[in-house]
Each structure stands twice: as C-alpha cells, then as structure tokens.
Length: 146
Image (cartoon, rainbow, N blue to C red; front, side, top):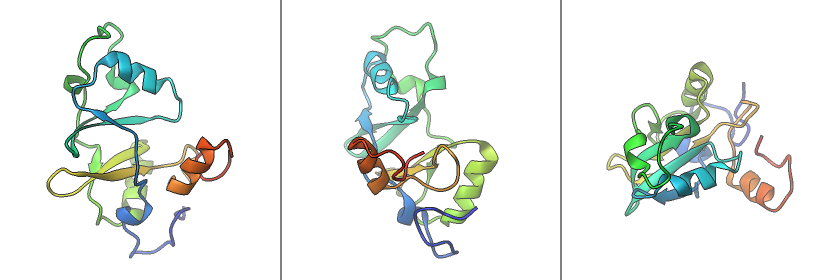
C-alpha cells in the first residue's frame, strides 16, 4: 500500500506524515473526562501529558468497566508498544501498524516530548493528515480521515 499523505519512498519519515496537533489531556485527568472524550468515535487514542512530556496513552479497551469515574486515568495507560520516533521510516511503521492491527502511535523524541500522532486511516490505506482532520472538523467528510 502506498502512503496517502506523503510521497512514497524510503526518505519519508514518521515526522513527515504525523498529525502535529493531536488531542492531549493532562496526565492527572479523571476517567470521567476520558470517557467523555472517547464518546467521539474519531478519538482512538488519548495522549496524557505533563509539561509536554508524554506520560501515557489510552485506548478505549484500556478502561475497565468497573472503574470509578473519579479514578485517575494514568495508571491505566501505557507507553510500551505505543510510541515511535520521528525519524523512523514511514513505510516501515505503516507496515508494522498493518501487521499489528494498531491504528495510532504517539510520536516522541528521545526525551519523551510529545511531537505528534501517527494516525492510520480507518480504511488502513494511508495516514491521517492535519488538513484532513481540520476538514472533518469543518464538516467536510472524505477529506483525509477515514
């Protein structure tokens, strides 16, 4: 499969195809707020940050049914297997996402600073883009997020 938002090729990196303004929440957020954000079907992964440092990632399946709305989300989050560096080849990471069935990876630098989000489209035919997400927010479906 070809990358949808950047020229295909070995020189295309994760930084070239990542979303630059992903949805973030503070690391001390309560589950009540997390559940509200996950009500939007387009939100697949939440990024928990503290002073720009990624402290954890959350998927819907990380949330236990019996958790209290006042519990903190961070203890349920994880980083392992959910982060990628900005300089990794986009085509290699694209194939990794296809192989694992994952659709999102947080993009961090060597110090853990959140740089963006790698977002595989719902149809798994390329990466989401900042422009596509902005178009969807304006109500223009089909403009890069699927």
